[in-house]
Image (spheres, rainbow, N blue to C red):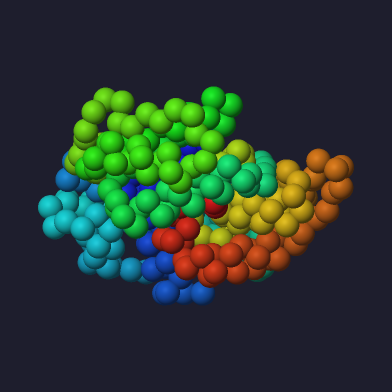
Amino acid sequence: MIEKVNPSHPDKVADRIAGAIVDLAYKKTDNPKIAVEVLIGHGNCHIIAETNATFSHDEVCKIVKRIINTEKTWINLKIVPQDEHLAENQAEEIRCGDNGIFKGVPVSKEEEKLSGFIRALYTELPTDGKFIYDEQTQTFIACQSNTNGYDLEQMIKFNIKGVQKVIVNPLGEWTGGTNVDTGATNRKLGSDMGRAVTGGGLHGKDLSKADVAVNIVCHMVAQETGQEVEALCAIGDESVEFRQKSDSHFSMPYARVVERARDYIRATGGFEKLAEWGLF
């Protein structure tokens, strides 16, 4: 089964806000330390940012209002410094900033097809949407707000070859968005990472955090080799061990992991752009 949500889903809105704040931190300093959590919904947006970067309440408010496109949101922002002991871990050189286990999986043709269709659909229908495709039964379930169900069903049948059953908005029409549902950071990791596995969230953190850098590199290695790859690391590690199904093992200096992830983020367009669709 494959799940995918679009950038207007409330959880993705939270991820995008967190990503945009990380982008802001990188504009302030080359290698910021930051972790952001966002909870948004029903006219409220709560943000906690642990960071060594300096930015203003107004700068964050502009990000929130741009992404949710409304002036009627109360923003509660809490900015606190990073724990001094964790900060010391990164003071001399680039080391792993978090514990975690990770698994990268090659993206299947079905996942590519589903993601490509939903991305294209979003250019025409940029409203809250979530989708599931069951490859075994060839059933496509689409929950798309503010849309004509019949037209969407025909579009799916035309674009997703082999689909046997299409279910559109099983509970009927709905308006969607953050005034209908709440959104929280890193709550849609299945949509972001497919069949991959992570010990932490992909969004709202700088590249020193393994949740970001090691997840991205596992994904990259899996696509490059066509094999599943697992990794593990702990706070303070100077290298990461990667293991593949073929029983091949290799280590990568954590500084190199960070640089590979940085290149991926730059190619994607930034942390906010990564948050829109995830890794596939």
